Structures are given as structure tokens and as C-alpha cells.
Image 1 (cartoon, rainbow, N blue to C red):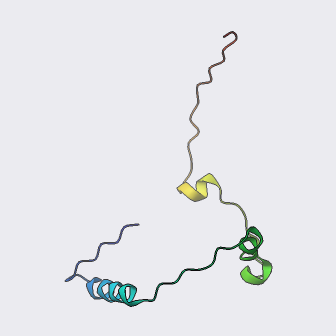
Image 2 (cartoon, rainbow, N blue to C red):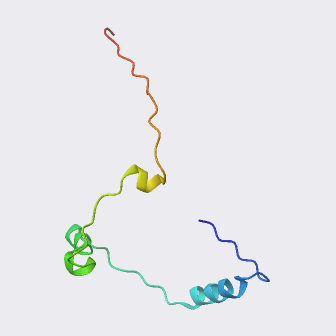
Image 3 (cartoon, rainbow, N blue to C red):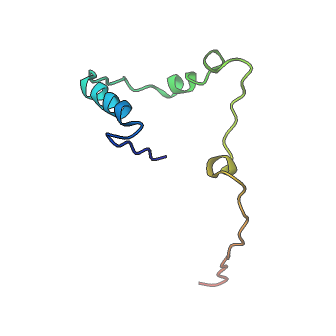
Length: 79
């Protein structure tokens, strides 16, 4: 998504305040997580025990339905 806010537009004041807050904010550098710590972010305690995380499908990531396009396979019998 691309959101464009102009100073005199509907969202101008909001973006101006956001920019000021970002400029005034103290720098925060989080420590890197290990693989186990990263996996812990998605533990049952974090996401809720009744939630099952499933990998996204290509349709989920691209939206809509994907059309199957035939591909050309080239087989070389001798090189």
C-alpha cells in the first residue's frame, strides 16, 4: 500500500505528528533472537491455544485465484 498525505489534506496533520514523533523518539536497537526465541513468538501462550497457524498458500499471498499456465519442459537426451 502507498499512502500519500499532503500537508493540507485530510491526513496531513496525522502524518506531521507521526513524523515529529519518529524524529523525537529515542533510538531502540533490539537484541537479535535465536531460532528458538523466534519460534517462541508463535507459541501457544503467545497466539492462543485454540489458534492453529497454517502456512500461507500462493492464493493467500497473491489474492484471488491463480491460473495454471502450461510450462515448456525441455529434455536433452544427449549432450
